[in-house]
Length: 257
Length: 367
Image: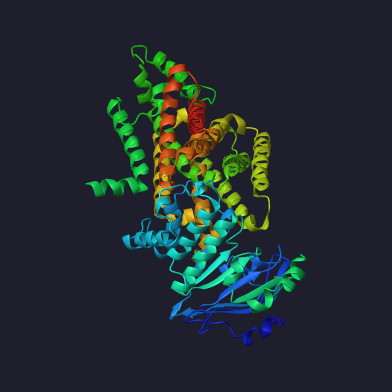
């Protein structure tokens, strides 16, 4: 098995899975250190995410996957190095972020439509109301995940699988080029997990989206990956998915037989 | 027509318009019924105003004093409303403001901050007045009263209150990402604030007698000026909350998503904290910490189980806040109870009713 170290990553050829795959980098992380205050979590992280590629960000609990995502979203500033966002079709990359559903507080009495509308909030600054065009796009996003009958329901009353679909729809409403998922199949029953993965496959096939999926649960989602970024002990190793997702590597990394 | 109604029902302005109509209606009614355009409480009570201004006095006591001072006047129930219209209007405006801001506090699970900030506001007032008293003592001329003028205290109080609240919120915002225990920080603000109030009052030999009214915020003594200040604050805060409702909701509900959409979170959090600070300090100065905290918590808490959507939540919370404050006035005038506590108790009863109905609904559904 060949696992490429950070700086060798540039030589790795992405597996083309869409018309634009590998054509241009959506994201370049170059020698980035990330941490909280004096506690450094990730050191010298370097990776490139090409357009149309689905990359799995894997690793055991507490390895620093969420820290890396927080760095990408701009919540944490790199102590060293650079994070550069590329362009897609001459426009800056638009991110669609799908958080862990457990992170969203059920104390808000938000309807499904209100949650979805948040996806277009960035396009209507300084106005409390949305345009008809935005409302239509929100409805289309809801349709694309097959949840239109839930539009007026409370988000907090939906099941785990339904919430995940709604959050994916919300990310789609932002018309993203890059979708970032944080543990999309955690806390969901196996049937719903399969549905979510099928939905993601469909999105890749129809919209050719670039995806970065954080997970530590294997079973369904890994079949989406073209590449894997393996996070462990503050370092990130990057390589083709087939070289990481072997029984031998997983059992060694997670200490499972 | 149908479209306009649909727009109105969706609009977050609706609850604010309704509250505005209620307040405008009350102002009109009271102004029409009053003998003069804007008589303040001291005008009504004459030379016994200081008695009524005592924090332990009740609205009905004050009214009976008023009746004795004007032997030919028949004090009717509605007249009490008319005489204390600024108190009624002030509490309605404060209830509306606190009920609106309380929705976000409740949803963000920051209620403890809601009780800590009024305490910080009171500590700020006592500290500023202590400073002024010390300066006054140093520059005291022979024969001059050692007491600071009531008007000076009333002017200084909002400055002390707002400064303390903004200072505390600034510190909390600064340490927000550096602590794992925000609740412990809010509780610290509460307890340190309470301790400082006692200390500042003890150090200031003339403070306690003057400041009890300011600290406890005797609603019954609200003047026309105080009401209009509170109304202006309510208008500005509500307008900002309506204008930036999307941003304030997103940064509260899903800050990570807000980052991904390139929202400047520190800026929006700062705006929310400023709104909260202004709301708390204005409400505390005019209605007292108990009323302010009571209405930050109880109406949103009562409204939450019945709200479907955030607009609905705002609307219900404001409706409960405004109606319970008005009913509280009725109770206070009717059974001779202090105004502020009566209103808080009525709001608590609304919460109990809401919980009771929720229980019934759950049983009905077999949950």
